[in-house]
Length: 382
Image 1 (cartoon, rainbow, N blue to C red):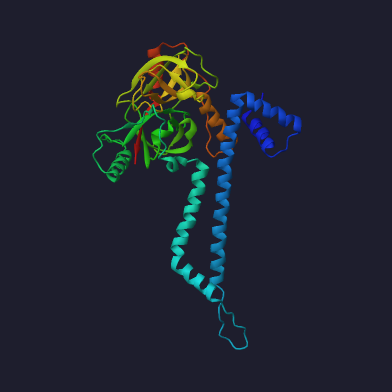
Image 2: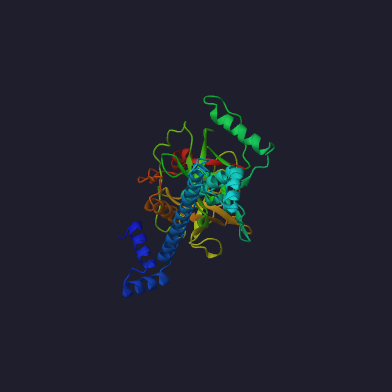
């Protein structure tokens, strides 16, 4: 059985024209006939495009450093020695102007170099979310990020209060209100969380809050905009792990008519809803999503969708505006594929997905008691 890395090596040989003609033709026929393989190939092209952009930015950064080093070296050269019988080095007006320009704009050039370096890290970590903050939903489709109506303070004050609350260890914190909120759930026991991309789109800072009102700073580490997924990482010295996750991520297609349920935060308290998987495709036939017959509301985005056995099958994304109970969820197979792709690309982050399911065979109330501590409010500050 081919692994994700095997597929990527095969696709790379194809794109680099290293395959023999019969093998190449056979692959092209399979890509045309097999939508799953075609989507895997498209994912590979998107991933390699990101890595190539990262390489290009690295080269730009190296050139900027080389230019600065050359100019620094030139400034140490004596322009005119002033000694008898020694040659005099003269510079052109153009070079003199360039040196004067450098002296007057050195700080600006340094900022430009810093921006280039920051762009390198932005590409490496996949934080493309601030570049696409104006992405809109298609007509008839409602994303379920909750805009908090009670927001009264200015943005800077919100962030200052948030930081004060987080740093008050042992104190009873006052409520902290972000501008938007959604739902997220634990991906690994060591602090990685999944939510919908549109929940954190345009965020300056993100706060994770559990059922026990404990709060942690979090940061996006990778986003899959096409499938409305973002992986967050808790970045807080007080965090010491979630413990063993009770559910597993389903990699196969869920069955039509399966009973499913979700747990999320359309309000301050956790809200449970159940229903069934009503279509294997999402809005306008998008095969990256399921349609589920569960009533969802703003704030549910990013919440987990589980089957009766406690397998994660999807992530709530949105709903059809004219049909109250027609909701859409990103398929869990795309989340698993995203994690596999990051691992295959030697990403610096390690994702240890849960391998044992503790919810199978439990009643629904028992499942919810085990699940509730792994589902969180995602509060967004802009």
